[in-house]
Image 1: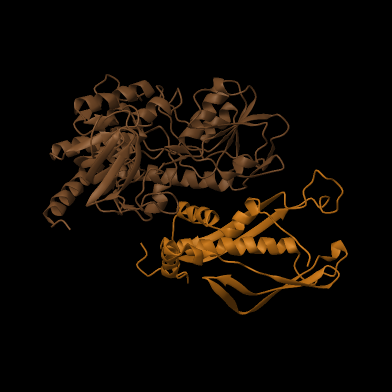
Image 2: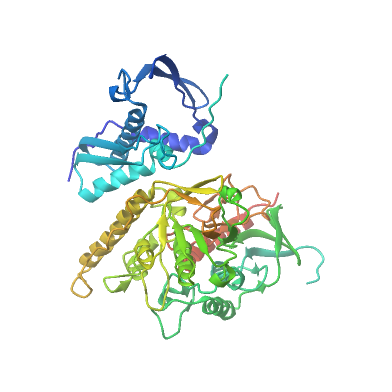
Length: 184
Length: 422
């Protein structure tokens, strides 16, 4: 067995403390996440994230993060950034991977390496408006993990399963969400 | 009953099901003067709120209450509803429980150094109250049910009796605990095409290594695990009932057997928009989680067998096939095209505390308590999922809980009696 203290860099005690605090004050658990997007040119846009609301007040990231998005040259675009659907895959990947690390820490499993490959299939006849039977979005997403950890294969599978159960982006993708788009 | 003021008594027990009766027996053993108030007759919810084919999930040998047990000739069988009613009625008779039948509690409130219990047949004053009204008073139906087209019939697991009450045609069963699987199976056999919507669930084989799964869980101490020993008691109390059925053939009822019979398995119902039901894409993970959890339970059983040197006396360990999920389960279902005629909501139950005028109910509608000791002095709770032990919600779980809580109650009465009255 592993005698050394497991350290995946996740502060589980703080997360459990937050759960405790939110039990007594559920209103503090109400968060609002924001992104700001500016069109640059063609299909190229820049999105930044900076502030969000949580714990009853405005919060700030340590710095402003920026995401360049564009479409690739095969769509006659200039490819100055990731395709938006690739950013969705990035969001899913990082959410699930953060979950794997957190659950592993909680279950005292030392991770040595974690990598994931994501694929989302898409028939672009949907977005091109060629066939109304074909949806615009992914027809499915596969996530394949390679995990080296001091644990059995079954325990590693349980980590990945539990991470999906608690993932925000996994929930956003697998369940419908009402989206309201308005113009000022 | 004709009376002037309220009747004074040490304890009022509300509900004459198995849990209230177990408590009555334990209070009698401790010479505590009490009454059991019952809105109708003993075991009323079994008499009036269950479907026709229901049997207990636990085998007959496990049907035990303080000073009482199953005496029939089929210890490995499972009681049907009439047998359950006569078992509980037999217990009430055997312990001479002081029951007031046809007495509906309309209010419980703090009064003096205890509580006033008002009913439609008079009032009681007592320093202690035991709530044993059960966990399954009202069928829980998700709010999205309101969005279903009006052409669709809706039935809850509280109203459902048998397939004959449903229109001919397709049925969407929502919920994959014991209730959902049993109803899906029965409705499918009536010739109605069934689609089963599956969220988080608990998979269990009926028989493992030649013995009933509850026999193993009992032997290995799983059912005795205490509420103050588990990692997260709130989560443990919300775990759905295991996918099991008590059938004469000791059949295993799981998603694979339903799929094999021709039932469509789809994800958790997530929404209804424009007459179209939408299902979550999380089915594969929910099945993976249930398979992993089942295998952890089987590992626990295997370890117990080895530790007790029983490997040569029982069948060898094995594992069940993982749950089969089709490559791309449908994410939507048109509720307007006539294929689905009925939705059966097998989405759980919740208790009814509308009569409880003591501020102990939290924002989720649950009573705040510590292992059945309610957050109001002299008040106790019985018969809820994982109240004090994993077995608390089963018939045989009531005995140990009633014993612990009647000890606490007796101590409370003795201590509060010695305090000067203010």
